[in-house]
Length: 324
Image (cartoon, rainbow, N blue to C red; front, side):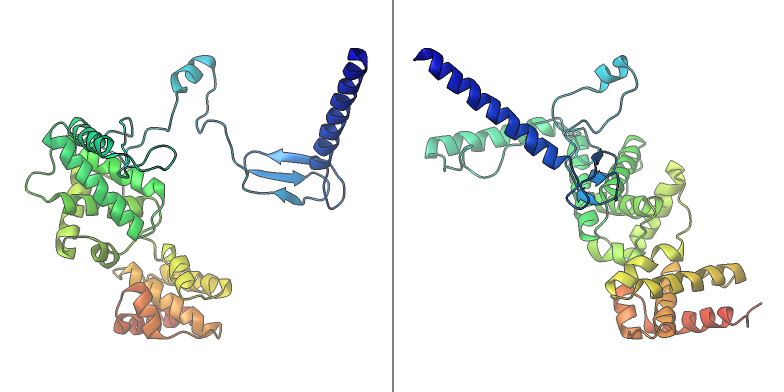
């Protein structure tokens, strides 16, 4: 009896292994041509090596986000938990206590437990911000995160803006200036350095300080910290404007062509890059027979229609070779 059971168990295990190997073979073969499938870890895709079909995209990389080239470097970088970040005043090394009074299963806490958690939150906040410098930094980084989110800026811009603010704080550039003003100028500088610039008007729309103060503080921070911020290129604004106006890729390329020609002729000198980009987008839409209005472009670019008309004529004249 025991031998029969053992034999039956071994058969079931064999059948299970065969099924697993069959399923593995199925996943490793291309559903289109039956060819061999390989994992492209760099792009997060599973691709057929014969016909090029992308079988699976956006796969999750469960490995570390860092690279190591020897065992010593691997030991130094190895850690448990999330990576440190400059966007948090304590670099993400402290504990966060959730504001919801619920346990791990989603059940509400009792009255005594709620009081206990409230006391823990209070003391946790006191330990996280021990002095005025840390409270200043926490408030500023919160402002940077809020403004970057409102402008749709990527994470690398937030990191850069946070590093700039930390440098300004370490070098005592804040006395006599508001936290909001310095943090806004850091966001403005970081966006330009990352190649995703925003105009002063756009930054001022989400800031709590006036445009004049932002410009003044920005010049001061760039000068004192010796930041290498290149002048904004009008072409960098074109994709965003074209996307907001729902224009085709042809119009976008035509607008960039107009701007490149204007730079060759020297028409862009002394002009606002935002105004030039808006005028180029409007001109390109007309040249490619796409419907848009000066009012629509003005609203998207946050610039007056008069500026668009003036720059529009200058771009077309440069295109026709009327400007030397």
